Amino acid sequence: MYIPKHFEEKDRSKLIAFMREYNFAAIVNTAKKKYWATHIPFLVSETSGGGILLRAHMAKSNPQWANFKSDEEVLIIFQEPHAYISPSLYESKVSVPTWNYIAVHAYGLPKILSSIEERIKLLEETFKVFEPKFKERWVTLPDDYRNELLDGIVAFEIIVTNIEGKFKLSQNRTEGDRERIIENLGEKKDKVKADIAEFMKKEKDLNSK
Image 1 (cartoon, helix red, strand yellow):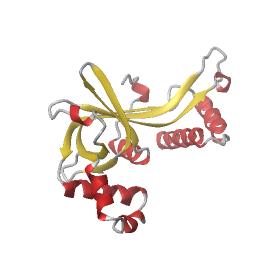
Image 2 (cartoon, one colour):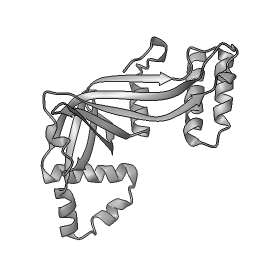
Image 3 (cartoon, helix red, strand yellow):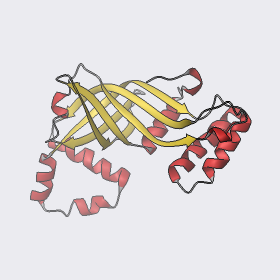
Image 4 (tube, one colour):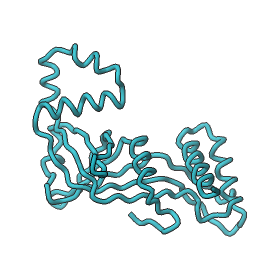
């Protein structure tokens, strides 16, 4: 990912927090001279050794997982809030439109979780993150239904070997420009744009300390 210095984010805690909040990501790898990408939710956690662990599952009928290699990295792209920035918000009239956004790219080696126990554990932890109350319903589902579901998925984990963060939040603009952008986006009813305004506020507050 191309990251100009003023947009580079290296704060590990901020990157992990972003991945947890916007955890529906795209996993990308190559096979037979073709790119494969699947959009799925990820569980993001930290290991006891200080590493970052990503876990997820996909349909067994999806051919992507069969092309995972233990010695070849995959790329997971986390991206969500973004907003068009009008040049009318800048002090200088010699300006052009741009786009503010946040993206985190995580790289790592995939490992298939092959046992039924590992698949069950992953699903139950997924319920815990997205809908804790569903665990009660899950255990009441017919065994044949659950077994068929478990047999139809492939669970995997990825220990992150490299992580890149790009927080493009008008850091290269004047303070006045940033204030107008925050105010403009904050007035929008579109939550995605409002989220960018909130990230810009946090960045501004952090840099003012």
